[in-house]
Length: 158
Ligand SMILES: [Fe+2]
Ligand SMILES: [Fe+2]
Image (tube, rainbow, N blue to C red):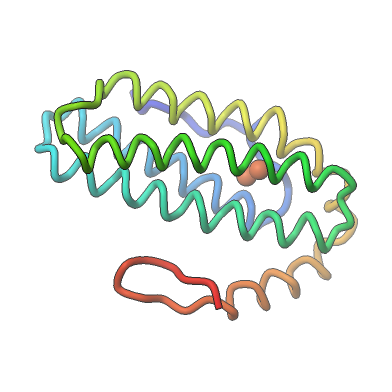
């Protein structure tokens, strides 16, 4: 049984956002596999890194779409993102400092809970502001992804 099973209530109805959320679910399930399969600390560490990178990328992408949709609570949503990024970053830093310092079950539970509760609690709030503007948002999203350059250590913003 994976850590998170994708269910329809997690759908926002905006394709790039749902794609990102599914990818984050899949990374959390990979973390679960790495932990429960007894993979080495290096594997666990690389999944945590990938999760942090993709979380940062997803938040920036989502914020650009919220801004384009004229979502009035963008600032408060941005603060939720900053807090989550800081917490995932702290987990990564602890791991880098001491690979055995993390309680795997605790990390997994945190990742699982923040993603589902953030999608259901916060992301769902902008849904009504986006559903009627999918074509415009698709254009904004294309500009956003084109403004990124890939580098060896992950995604960078120009
Ligand atoms: Fe969000
Ligand atoms: Fe999101």
